[in-house]
Length: 114
Image (tube, rainbow, N blue to C red; front, side, top):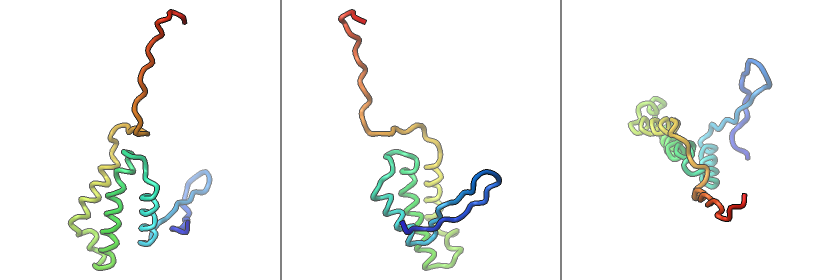
């Protein structure tokens, strides 16, 4: 994909582990575009967090380019967006895996045959 980098993750036992690290503003923008082009399942927990996450990345990008580093902690709208992401991480019950109608029950046969 040409986005991000693969970095090793320390583990105590078992097989070595790696993580995909997206840490440049351009890569974050490309990842957001990828998710917009291939949407997450409607109503899924990650889909509920996506809009807040993209807003957070835009605010972060702007503040890092225009203000000192401490501005991230002092930005008034930033706490709201972070709270929105955290709210999306809370369990909110099962979500349907499709937008299809529930199947109708099949009526029992009246012929008496089993």
